[in-house]
Each structure stands twice: as structure tokens, then as C-alpha cells.
Length: 172
Image 1: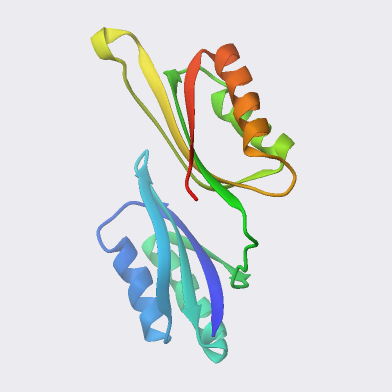
Image 2: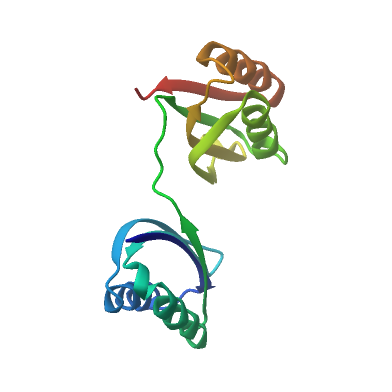
């Protein structure tokens, strides 16, 4: 079996996911996991599938044909990840929205060698009509390059600068 990461983007319409899943199944593939969202009228998704090695080429051709339905799919071959014992943390951030929050937080992660496994961000109205709040939840993995204390200190420093609340929870 070969693992493939499918990245799909297109105008949102009924049947978007059904077309992908049907195509994968018709080529002997197994849908292992996915993340999908509708943003600003477009639909985007990432899907990890397992496919028999001798079906990869035919699957690729069939997925390309979905372009006629307004779906662009890119295919990336992957290897099953064997992750060393690493510390997994959940970082939550809430504060008034302003440009640069994501850049500053993710740059801090990168500077410390912290990898992002999953990141979700959103905006919502603040209570009592006090503007717009930015919220982020990041599942991250600390490699041997740093420690949880180093990350906590770096995030506390930027929290004060950005005027946001940041909490770090150990997931191990």
C-alpha cells in the first residue's frame, strides 16, 4: 500500500467530498483521515489515503478528471510517520484581533524548533461589543531542540507584547 496526501480546493458545492471519496474507493483506496473546511465560499480539504501501489497512477488520473467539477486536487506521496517520543502540547490563544498575531506565534515556534501538527484559527465578536477577538488552538510537538519551559517563556513574552492570553497544556 502507498500513502498519499490529497489536497483539494474548489468552489463549494454539494457532492464535493462524495466525488473524492467515491474516486478513492473505486481505486481500492482507504480514507485514513481528513481535515476539511469551507472558507469564504471555497472548500478546501486535506485527506490521507492508503492505495494499492499499482492503482496510484489510475487514481491520479481519475482525481485529475474531477477538475471538470471545479475541484483541483494535488497528490503528494508520503511515508508512514514513525515519530520519536516527543512532547505534544496544546496552545490556546485569545486576544483582540490585529495583523501579525499568527506570524509572531508561528515564528516563535519555528525559532524554537517546535512543529505544528494542527492549527485552527477564528474570529468572533468580543462580549459587550468590544471589537473582534482572534482565537487560535495549536497542537504542537516539541522536538529535541527545545523544552516546554523554553516554549512557555517565549510565549509569555509575546503574549504580553501582543496583549493576548496564551495557555499551554501538556497532551502527553
